[in-house]
Image 1 (tube, helix red, strand yellow):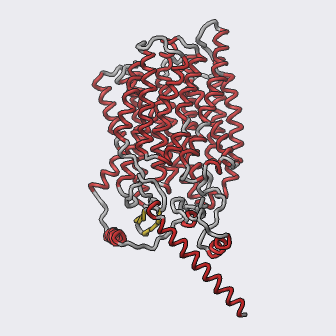
Image 2: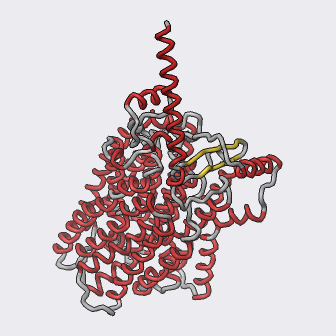
Image 3: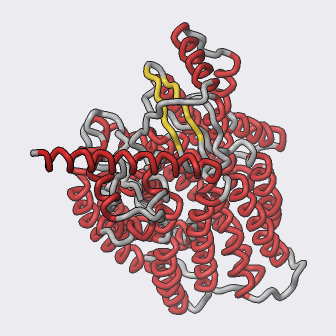
Length: 616
């Protein structure tokens, strides 16, 4: 009995020593660790958390304060600029006529367009290493130099530019989309972690609208001049990036639901829908009516006002601040806590909370000491993350769900981008010589798919815990019917098929992004979602560059010309794409079944629950 008591005292003494050592080492390293004590106020509860490691650019601000909404409003403009790759159809005919390219060469340039837009591995890594403004700055330079070279070639300022130089220049130019889009998407997803589907739907919706915005400017201001359009891309995108980089910055996220936030998001969604309807209406009017310069410039001015609408939220919060008694008491609490040198931290179960014990594994601590500390709970033992927690990129790519999501996304966007890249030629082959209305219709419906997928999936995932990938299954099954409709070439079906495809194509983006963040966390979200996004250029290379280009040129050769007219120009392509989307539908159903338990865990109480950290 005495021996047992002696051993118990020895263990307690050893454990106390271990605790004191950890505490001492922690304070010893405080000067080398980026520390911040975050007091997150979000009525009706007060949350406190300690973050031991985070980017220096993080702004210590009260949750729900104005800067996150300023950043979201600025992100709208950056996303419009980031959609420059969607304008390839506006200047691709000039590349073919002025530079004398064949359809297959033009299609390969379209592949370069998609590769540049979607290869975002470097931007994804940079988002964890650099502040958002520096990531935006890279996008500014790539757009300026890339589109500048193409503009010089089209205007014959630089005669006889080699094909491979133009291919590389287009890759560099459209890669600005990856840098600009990744910077604002990752920043805003981290600023609003409890509304991931909504934020992803809004931002990807605006980038889907960018094609219609550029088309509006192309037809009403530039009078259909491709060279002037390229000059606008060369100078206009850098101007927007430089103007907005100060406002896109990380802020302290709220850890609880805010009823006002729902109303703010509804306002932004309503403003984006109003902009989409306006753009479609004015583009159609311009196509059927002869409008004077005064009316055209008025249309552009109204468009700019609608693009600025999201900034009304921070403006309203400035002019009409909420000053309730309860909020005042919470503000006093913040002041009292801020003046104190000590605090009892509440380590929240989010990826931003770092386990103190992880800093001391390199110290000279015996195995017995560590086992005792782990057994008593002083130090948490590392384990592999579970779905819903923060994964590193290496941990994510060995998961079956990661590759299922990649393949499903690859089939969905790869088939859709094939039609987008060849939309002008599809229209001409079926008797529609002006592709601007088709492009605007596709952009409008693409926007509806991106925005609507965020809203609809967010509703059903919170109310029924239905995995978001269910909507990828639904839309890819519709895409099968759409491609069969294209292949049939029945009278009056071209516009209907384009509208349906635009919606389904947009849904793939609006679903993949929040799904990736929910399965693998936000810590390495930038590189994970950008790697999945490679499905777009790979699909463009295989389905657009190789399949569609070969089929088109073969049919054109049968007609003894460089252009192809008739149903057979793309029929085989459409049939193959229908089969691929059928396979994608089956795989997305499998993925949905696998993810059902994960979403039941994440949304068990009708709202997103931050999972426990895996401490890696």
